[in-house]
Image (cartoon, rainbow, N blue to C red):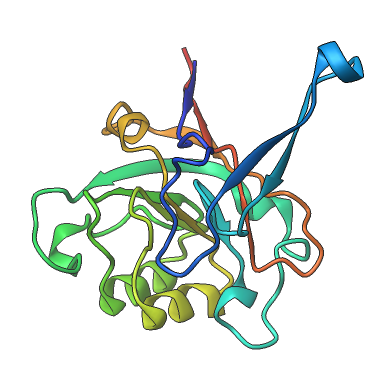
Length: 192
Protein backbone atom coordinates (compact mmCIF):
# COMPACT_ATOMS: atom_id res chain seq x y z
CA UNK A 1 0.00 0.00 0.00
CA UNK A 2 1.25 3.50 -0.85
CA UNK A 3 0.18 6.46 1.31
CA UNK A 4 0.61 9.95 -0.10
CA UNK A 5 2.37 12.28 2.34
CA UNK A 6 2.39 15.31 0.02
CA UNK A 7 0.15 18.34 0.04
CA UNK A 8 -1.35 19.53 -3.25
CA UNK A 9 0.75 22.13 -5.10
CA UNK A 10 -1.43 24.90 -6.51
CA UNK A 11 -1.99 28.64 -6.30
CA UNK A 12 -3.79 27.95 -3.00
CA UNK A 13 -0.67 26.37 -1.44
CA UNK A 14 0.38 28.39 1.62
CA UNK A 15 3.98 29.61 1.51
CA UNK A 16 6.35 30.69 4.26
CA UNK A 17 6.01 34.47 4.84
CA UNK A 18 8.19 36.29 2.31
CA UNK A 19 8.61 33.30 -0.02
CA UNK A 20 7.36 33.54 -3.62
CA UNK A 21 3.74 32.56 -4.17
CA UNK A 22 3.00 29.50 -6.27
CA UNK A 23 1.77 30.41 -9.76
CA UNK A 24 0.32 27.84 -12.18
CA UNK A 25 -0.54 29.27 -15.58
CA UNK A 26 -1.93 27.43 -18.60
CA UNK A 27 0.69 27.43 -21.36
CA UNK A 28 -0.74 25.19 -24.04
CA UNK A 29 -4.21 23.77 -24.77
CA UNK A 30 -5.10 20.61 -26.67
CA UNK A 31 -7.69 22.45 -28.77
CA UNK A 32 -5.24 25.18 -29.82
CA UNK A 33 -1.79 23.55 -29.59
CA UNK A 34 -2.46 19.84 -29.81
CA UNK A 35 -1.16 19.25 -26.25
CA UNK A 36 -1.79 20.49 -22.69
CA UNK A 37 0.86 22.05 -20.41
CA UNK A 38 1.13 24.52 -17.52
CA UNK A 39 3.93 26.97 -16.69
CA UNK A 40 4.98 26.97 -13.03
CA UNK A 41 6.57 29.68 -10.89
CA UNK A 42 7.44 28.77 -7.33
CA UNK A 43 10.17 28.81 -4.72
CA UNK A 44 12.27 25.75 -4.01
CA UNK A 45 10.58 25.46 -0.62
CA UNK A 46 6.98 25.45 -1.86
CA UNK A 47 4.48 22.85 -0.70
CA UNK A 48 5.85 19.54 0.56
CA UNK A 49 9.60 19.97 0.12
CA UNK A 50 13.04 19.07 1.40
CA UNK A 51 15.75 21.41 2.68
CA UNK A 52 19.37 20.73 1.66
CA UNK A 53 22.33 21.87 3.81
CA UNK A 54 22.95 24.89 1.54
CA UNK A 55 19.64 26.37 2.76
CA UNK A 56 21.29 27.43 6.06
CA UNK A 57 24.93 26.26 5.98
CA UNK A 58 27.46 28.38 4.04
CA UNK A 59 29.19 26.05 1.58
CA UNK A 60 26.76 23.24 2.46
CA UNK A 61 25.72 20.66 -0.10
CA UNK A 62 23.02 21.64 -2.55
CA UNK A 63 20.08 19.38 -3.27
CA UNK A 64 21.70 17.99 -6.44
CA UNK A 65 24.86 17.10 -4.48
CA UNK A 66 23.08 15.07 -1.79
CA UNK A 67 23.14 11.26 -2.19
CA UNK A 68 19.72 9.91 -3.14
CA UNK A 69 19.97 7.42 -0.26
CA UNK A 70 19.36 10.35 2.13
CA UNK A 71 15.80 10.73 0.79
CA UNK A 72 14.68 7.09 1.03
CA UNK A 73 14.59 4.73 3.98
CA UNK A 74 12.87 3.03 6.87
CA UNK A 75 10.73 5.52 8.74
CA UNK A 76 8.29 5.99 11.61
CA UNK A 77 5.98 8.74 12.88
CA UNK A 78 6.07 10.38 16.32
CA UNK A 79 2.82 12.06 17.35
CA UNK A 80 3.57 15.19 19.43
CA UNK A 81 0.31 17.05 18.80
CA UNK A 82 -0.70 17.19 22.47
CA UNK A 83 2.01 19.54 23.73
CA UNK A 84 2.53 23.28 23.64
CA UNK A 85 5.46 25.37 22.45
CA UNK A 86 8.61 23.86 20.95
CA UNK A 87 8.83 20.06 21.03
CA UNK A 88 10.89 18.89 23.99
CA UNK A 89 13.05 15.80 24.56
CA UNK A 90 10.64 14.22 27.03
CA UNK A 91 8.02 13.98 24.25
CA UNK A 92 10.19 11.59 22.20
CA UNK A 93 10.99 7.89 22.57
CA UNK A 94 14.42 7.22 24.07
CA UNK A 95 15.83 5.18 21.18
CA UNK A 96 15.31 3.68 17.74
CA UNK A 97 16.52 6.56 15.56
CA UNK A 98 19.77 5.31 14.04
CA UNK A 99 19.58 5.23 10.25
CA UNK A 100 15.84 5.99 10.29
CA UNK A 101 13.77 8.78 8.81
CA UNK A 102 11.89 10.41 11.68
CA UNK A 103 8.58 12.07 10.80
CA UNK A 104 6.80 14.25 13.34
CA UNK A 105 3.07 14.90 13.47
CA UNK A 106 3.07 18.27 15.24
CA UNK A 107 -0.04 20.37 14.58
CA UNK A 108 2.37 23.13 13.57
CA UNK A 109 4.74 22.89 16.53
CA UNK A 110 8.47 23.31 15.88
CA UNK A 111 11.45 21.37 17.22
CA UNK A 112 13.56 22.76 20.03
CA UNK A 113 17.34 22.91 19.47
CA UNK A 114 17.70 20.16 22.11
CA UNK A 115 15.55 17.80 20.04
CA UNK A 116 17.50 18.63 16.88
CA UNK A 117 20.79 17.87 18.68
CA UNK A 118 19.34 14.62 20.05
CA UNK A 119 18.20 13.45 16.59
CA UNK A 120 21.64 14.17 15.12
CA UNK A 121 23.41 12.42 18.04
CA UNK A 122 21.10 9.41 17.68
CA UNK A 123 21.95 9.08 13.97
CA UNK A 124 18.62 9.98 12.35
CA UNK A 125 18.95 9.77 8.56
CA UNK A 126 16.40 12.54 7.85
CA UNK A 127 13.68 14.39 9.75
CA UNK A 128 10.28 15.58 8.57
CA UNK A 129 7.28 17.48 9.87
CA UNK A 130 3.77 18.47 8.89
CA UNK A 131 4.62 22.05 9.93
CA UNK A 132 5.61 24.67 7.38
CA UNK A 133 8.97 24.97 9.19
CA UNK A 134 10.74 22.41 11.35
CA UNK A 135 12.10 25.15 13.59
CA UNK A 136 14.12 28.32 13.80
CA UNK A 137 17.52 29.03 12.23
CA UNK A 138 19.33 27.19 15.03
CA UNK A 139 17.27 24.01 14.53
CA UNK A 140 17.80 24.11 10.76
CA UNK A 141 21.54 24.73 11.18
CA UNK A 142 21.96 21.82 13.63
CA UNK A 143 20.24 19.32 11.32
CA UNK A 144 21.62 20.59 8.03
CA UNK A 145 25.22 20.93 9.27
CA UNK A 146 25.02 17.19 10.00
CA UNK A 147 23.62 16.68 6.46
CA UNK A 148 20.30 15.48 7.85
CA UNK A 149 17.73 16.47 5.20
CA UNK A 150 14.65 18.27 6.49
CA UNK A 151 11.21 17.51 5.00
CA UNK A 152 8.57 20.15 5.66
CA UNK A 153 4.83 20.56 5.00
CA UNK A 154 4.10 16.84 4.95
CA UNK A 155 0.43 15.92 4.78
CA UNK A 156 -0.82 15.37 8.37
CA UNK A 157 -3.69 13.12 7.25
CA UNK A 158 -1.20 10.67 5.73
CA UNK A 159 1.07 10.85 8.78
CA UNK A 160 -1.88 10.07 11.06
CA UNK A 161 -2.47 6.80 9.18
CA UNK A 162 1.12 5.74 9.90
CA UNK A 163 1.26 6.16 13.67
CA UNK A 164 2.62 2.97 15.25
CA UNK A 165 3.81 1.54 11.92
CA UNK A 166 7.22 1.10 10.30
CA UNK A 167 7.34 1.83 6.57
CA UNK A 168 9.57 2.91 3.71
CA UNK A 169 9.60 6.67 3.13
CA UNK A 170 10.45 8.14 -0.27
CA UNK A 171 10.85 11.90 -0.85
CA UNK A 172 13.07 12.36 -3.90
CA UNK A 173 13.82 15.99 -4.80
CA UNK A 174 14.12 17.46 -8.28
CA UNK A 175 17.75 17.62 -9.40
CA UNK A 176 18.00 21.42 -9.18
CA UNK A 177 21.60 22.50 -9.81
CA UNK A 178 22.71 24.63 -6.89
CA UNK A 179 19.31 24.18 -5.21
CA UNK A 180 18.82 24.93 -1.53
CA UNK A 181 15.87 22.52 -1.56
CA UNK A 182 13.15 21.13 -3.77
CA UNK A 183 9.49 20.21 -3.84
CA UNK A 184 9.05 16.45 -3.39
CA UNK A 185 6.31 13.87 -3.86
CA UNK A 186 6.61 12.22 -0.45
CA UNK A 187 5.10 8.76 -0.01
CA UNK A 188 5.08 5.94 2.53
CA UNK A 189 5.15 2.33 1.34
CA UNK A 190 3.60 -0.18 3.73
CA UNK A 191 4.07 -3.89 3.34
CA UNK A 192 0.75 -5.74 3.02
